[in-house]
Length: 238
Length: 238
DNA sequence: TAAATAAAAGTCAAAGATACTTTTATTTTT
DNA sequence: AAAAATAAAAGTATCTTTGACTTTTATTTA
Image 1 (cartoon, rainbow over the protein chains, first blue to last red):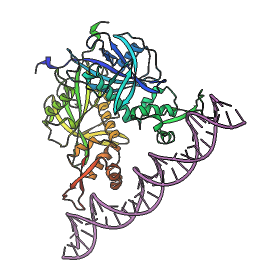
Image 2 (tube, protein in one colour):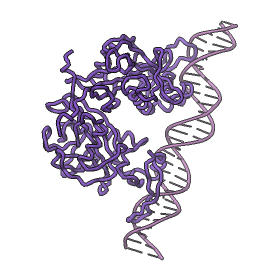
Image 3 (cartoon, each protein chain N blue to C red):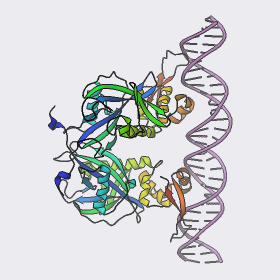
Image 4 (tube, chains in turn brown, blue, red, orange):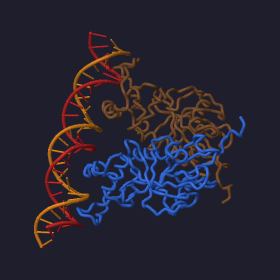
């Protein structure tokens, strides 16, 4: 068995970075426009190459610092899955070690580090499909990767991310970290609604509180500028 | 930024292979005794190196064929997680792409392919810890990797596998595939009991059926040799 | 000060889970 | 062959959780 058939692949850390859009009240994710080949000028998930003396966790934290200048703790990041199709990258063998990051803030974006542009794309539902929308274009994630316009197998990675979040909604909704350290029940319902493909007011506030109260605790009352009774503030229990 | 700092790691496919022990009525997993360095003579999970033109899924199927001579479909295998600590292997950089396989049979084991021995170890609970037991020794998975006697970070990988199985027990108990194509409710309860650290008769049969019946369907009645009413046979719905 | 608003808090019936009992189909013992 | 033992299915009653809906409360706006 010749040793040259053993793979020594490149390993890209590919990160699905989520935050919350306070205007549209929707979750959003970060895409960058690639400055270089392969897939130059295509929109893609932020990536970096794993380095020799670095764990994937550390590379993921470094990626976030490089792309958006934020030093986040590991607690807002988790491993998603590893994508290994030998043809997923063109011309070279590269594994994608996919991560997810829940940002508690929505920072201003500055292109750089291999990107000519960087934007937030909001998650919307369209006839049962998930679509990410922003910056005068949108990508339907149900389309095959090469049809969608997104680079590589990134539509599939994002789809996997969405499904993971959806599955965890009822026992460990880490996605709520995008709302910051504290949040109202309405905000939580807005996030849930996006992943369940419904609207926040289809989810009854009282029932939502009853069925999820083990997951968060009350930490005070918000001082709202809008009319109506001020909402209570909650914090995740985990 | 010098290009030599970019990692070109080896990638091992590391597989937690489960089957059911019909004597002890317990789930068991496969360990091999390593024939070569690193970690020569240590018990370890079966592994293989990813090849250049091969997906990780394909490598995992190949590993099972090499180690136990079985051609299994992808449906009995799933990706677990990727372990990337730069110090997890000695002397070289190697990622472990961990998988789980649920074997519907318990084949005879024949050492070979880098192993001087290969055995089934049954999963048992000991004061809240999980322990794997067999072949006149046992490994406590709660101990730090280097204390347990198992190679590399394999105790941590097995622990991750157990937790994944436990979390899926109530919505997609793929682990029941180790019982073969059909199974009785008692057998299912035996598997559940092992991961929930209790005994099968602590789980009420009638209630178990009611709360899990959406997951399996009746496909007939077993012809049992033992005394008592013959049990019904079930099949997974997914 | 009254109306409008938004959210919390409460109610009640239906569905689901849990502890427990009874019945049924089989083997073993007498 | 009948009775006892066994193991599993099937059934029952109570308690808990969920889900649709109503009422109350705290705030802003008219």
